[in-house]
Image (tube, rainbow, N blue to C red; front, side):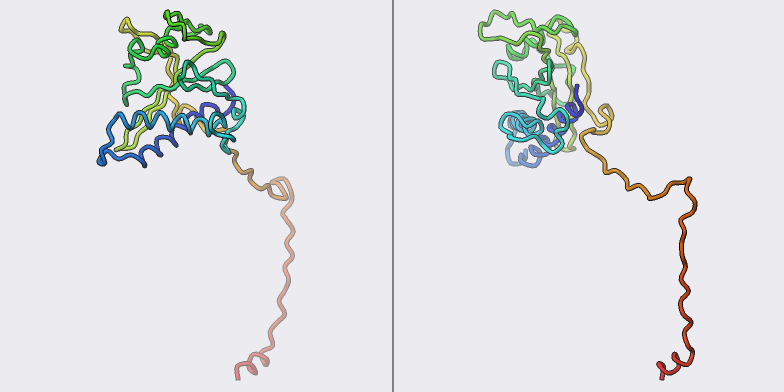
Length: 226
């Protein structure tokens, strides 16, 4: 994937989590359902902002080479973002339980995405007997699984290819955590180039001219002191 796309996903999730944590307070009566719906909506808006699509007119300053290449590509009303042949949908999961998701209990769209026959299959199998479900050939749909806790503030973010697990098996063909360690330095953040000296180690010592200060007249010093 082009430089900065995965970092953009992580940036959007971090910003969305901070916004939600600062806006909602369980002591004020907000319940888990409120956090879930709000986190989903704010993450959608933050992804639009980062990539300059949807409701956002311009990408963020850190859009990188992926900004402008990403387009909104919703699937049956489920928010999606596509880069090349890869589309990303959202799924909020219970913190610490990303591998326990039961795709056979999710929406028809998520079930359809999880029906991809195997990890390398570029063609989604959407034969659920529902006429309104459709997809674009040659598009691989991945899922961005996100979660967070407020106290202490912790975040989880994964990108993976879901597997329909009505058989009780694994929930993912593959799953990759999007963390600072796994992603490494953000290539969208350009470091300021250090200023190079006017000489290098192979050059002779820089000539320095010393100027002798004129000697002070002792009589003058005495006169000023009087």
